[in-house]
Structure formats: structure tokens, C-alpha cells
Amino acid sequence: MAFSSNSGATPGGRRFRGTGSLSDINVVPLVDVVLVLLIIFMLTAHVMEFGLEVEVPKVRQVQDSAKELPVITVTRDGRLYLNENPVNINELPSTVKARFGAGQEVYVRADKATVWDSLAQVVSTLGEAKIKVNMVTQPVDEAEAPGKKGP
Image (cartoon, rainbow, N blue to C red; front, top):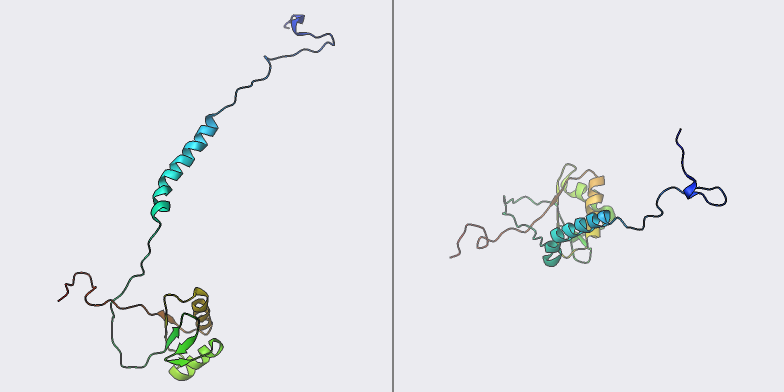
């Protein structure tokens, strides 16, 4: 059994152990967090400064066809046309099936300034009617084609 002196005793009989409170702040976790944030900032600063440029690709026209195909055009203001004739979005699947047959694919072309909501509604309506949807892209001019030299 160990004996202790009464040097830490108070008049009330309580004893204090230890050397008192530690007033130093541990800065290691703070430095770790700051270094991680610095690395993240260094990696993303280049993207924030210049931004991301996305250019929609142009494709070559694959084939020409003399057959009339169902082409749905969506204008900038959201109006719909089926081969140059105005059409209502609610009557679109039935009009396509009546004019071109049940197993027909539909080609959708839209102005690049078209609001996405209008285009999404057209694709959704055609998808619900089990009509396959193909998107129309802009063909590349022969002068702009890679590897081709102009006259």
C-alpha cells in the first residue's frame, strides 16, 4: 500500500491531482485542414479562371433518302412542326402513327437556342407512345471537314 503526504490536501480534506489545466491549443488538425483546402484550391483554380468550353460536334451526313421521313421541328419559342405542318404536342404520337405508320422512327431537330423544357416534353411524349426518337445534328461543310483543304 502506498502512502502519500498531505501536501496537496486542503482544509476541507479534498486533494487535487495533476498539474492544472493545459492552455495550449493543438494546431495540427487546423494545419491539416488548411493544407487540404490549399491543394483543392490549387487544383480547381485553373478551371475557375478559364471555365469549361463545350462545343457541340458536327457530323457528316451519312446517307440521303428520297423517302419522306417524320421530322419534328421545335422552334426557339417552343412551337412544334411535323414536316412543315404545325402540330399540337398532345396529338403528336397519334399524328405520327396515322401519317407514317406504327413502327416508324421520328427525327427531332431543334434550334440551338430552344429551351430544354420544350424539347424534353417532346421526347417524353414520343417515348411514352413507344416511338423511337433520333436527334438531328448539323452536317459539316466540306470546307470545314478535318483533313480537307479548300479550293
